[in-house]
Image (cartoon, rainbow, N blue to C red; front, side, top):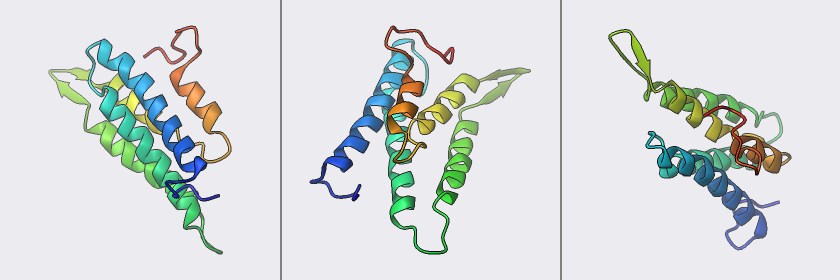
Length: 133
């Protein structure tokens, strides 16, 4: 399956789910006046989707495409650490860092579980937030 053919359905399915998950999480954050709003969430979800699929597409015999996931965790952790601040014993930005990590988790599921992992990120349809963000 070619995820990088812009004329194919898989490309737009992957991109659409990533953008949708990022938009839903980001909109909730932006409406509450929190950092890491719609644009940030969409970019994190879409970037993760692209990197996971790129790692799978470039895998050859003797290589391990799951190493891409390890590098994503490191990179997103670094990004999340950049939004946390400490001021006179008070730490802020921890929830924003967790949201960035969860945004990237929307698309870490790869080809097999994108619907399930995206659904876990955005929560149930009745508006309850399963993660407490």
